Amino acid sequence: MSCDIGLYGLAIMGQNFALNMASHGFKVCVGNRSPAKVELTVNRAKDEGELPIVGSSDVEDFVKQLSKPRKVIILVMAGKPVDETIAKISKYMEEGDVIVDGGNEWFHNTLRRGKDLESKGIHFVGMGISGGEEGARNGPSLMPGGPKAAYDMIEPILSKCAAQVNDGPCTGYVGALGSGNYVKMIHNGIEYGDMQLIGEVYDIMKHVLKMSNEEMANTFVEWNKGELESYLIEITSTILNKKDDVTNEGYVLDYVLDKTGMKGTGRWTIQEAAERSVAAPTMAASLDARYISARKDERVKASSILKGPDMTSAEIPVHKGQMLDDLKAALYASKVCSYAQGLGIIKSASDDMVWNVNLSECARLWKGGCIIRAALLQKIQDALARDATLPNLVLDPVIAGELNERTAAWRRVVVVAIGYGVSTPSMSGSLNYFDSYRRASLPANLTQAQRDFFGGHTYERTDREGVFHTAWTDAHKSIGDISERKAGEI
Image 1 (tube, rainbow, N blue to C red):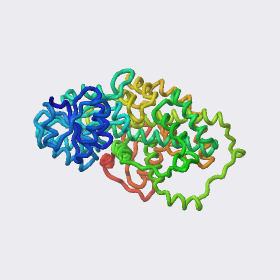
Image 2: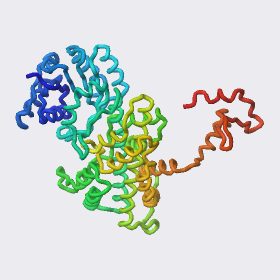
Image 3: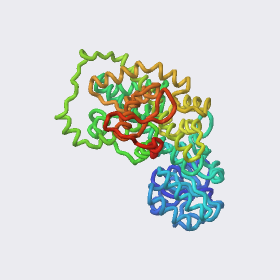
Image 4: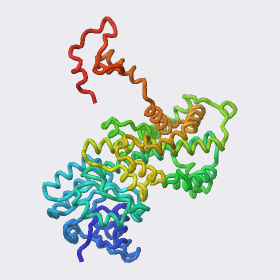
């Protein structure tokens, strides 16, 4: 019997997703550069219940084992390896077949590959996959973007293998080619922000409230029962509670070096935010925090040179119970702003690229299986379903009400953190975003006046229509046609 689908690339994510598809009754052919990985996956399938997975000896054999129209998912390292894999596989494929790239890929590469394959009549889909190793095996969030006809061909498989929540599978048609990778990229940017926000809360708990690992773990367990329920809150409590099995003393977390790695999707998110002129301070701050963390040796040296505030509880009194309540409120509000920023980037890109991405659907896809899954996403989904034209998530009446209720607590946390010299770049970034967005007037008038002063960039007035320039001093001369000065503005 021919195989329903092929999966090429058998690192742990590829193995687990192949087993996932097979577990749902689909016959899967697997392929890999290394025959050993093929053998390993086939043996895992046998060990996990005689699952319908067959191996292939080479690329030609891999493609030949697939039923027509052929459907292939590739899960290899982003960049050149994807191009090489597509070249090898497409050589044996025919018009009407489908290739799905399930890696974390820069969406411009996806657009290029789609165009190349289109000339051969082969459909190409870029699909974001979130959920890590566990999600790939048991049900991830799947974000496919590409030709609708190609999506329809793979939809029965994706819908069965994705995570399942109250209103269906955590997958769906995101939009045209490039949109799936883009939505996954922003998902990862939000993930960066969320992780940094939790890290900042942990920092305050540890260094201001002087809480033990066990106390912090128990607090996160309680928080995970309410509005902050999420995968990242859940694993944070588990991490805090894990005893060290190397030294048999203390907790693993206290031995983990404070240097955060990254694969690049967070950087792409901030690059895209800048390209689309969308403010994303929460996520940008989380990226900066990773950069600073990487400079461990410099920070160690700086710690003996640069001085903090040396505040005491007598100078800045902190009531533990009140501060924990404030931290909970501040974390929730900050997370909302981070999601608002990420969804704003998707909206801008979707408008520019004519993808017609449904933001409410994005929130729904993220409710299960993925790293940023959280109870909050139901409220976000509902808000965006109520008004698809909402210019910003924070303007939804329900969401706005929740933010307004938490602003006092939010400010108290940031003030205390500053007083104790504990950096909260993402939480402060979220609060600054909120404060900037809620104000009808900003000091941008001075900035624009400065631009007009030194560069003749002109300005608009509050009392009349038109574009204006002022000769601010006797040294300023006429700049000619004012309308030409607006050329080149982003």
